[in-house]
Amino acid sequence: MKNRQVALMLSVPPHCRDKLRQMAARRNFHNPERVTSASTIARELVLEGLERFEKMETNLAPTEE
Image (cartoon, rainbow, N blue to C red; front, side):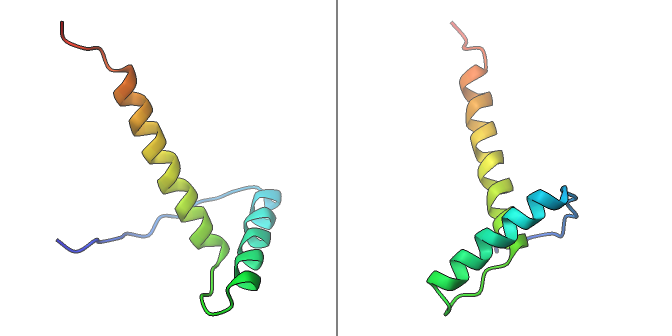
């Protein structure tokens, strides 16, 4: 099955938005062939955070003995 994505609106404080923009600008400076946006980085961070959270939940789940 194809990796389908859906839109999600995310609101962050201005200082977070600015930090994401700075991170994107750095990536674009280091690799101008591939344009990265603040929203792309936010998406990566959300997905990484969810993955970590799922692993943490798995480790906290009670084991059957």
